[in-house]
Image 1 (cartoon, rainbow, N blue to C red):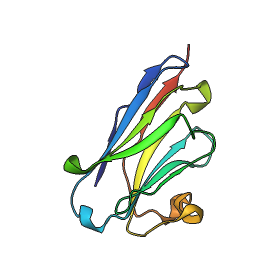
Image 2: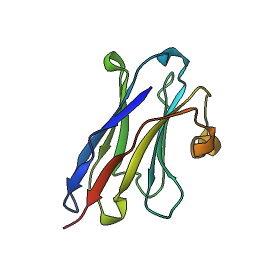
Image 3: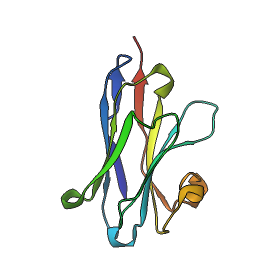
Image 4: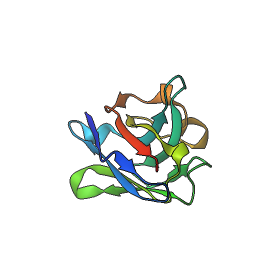
Length: 125
């Protein structure tokens, strides 16, 4: 089970930190991904994290602004979002896969096995 939290409203240029807490059979999780979605659009890859070797992947639109990290003790993956822009406004979802994903697969939402509920991020002045 995945529980996402930390969304909210922030001014452009501001920061937010999202968390994705995993519970249950976490030893079967290999990759965690964050996706976002706006009304009428498909779910978009944001970033991915391979649980066992800490490999990280970022969408070009967020590279250098967003950072994904893991808190081992809490079975939590955090998404630190800095220099937020209005175009970052979306519902953010975390997802988990039992597969070892690579660059070409981590971006595909259909390949994830579990999804958390979304958390809304609004960037507006």
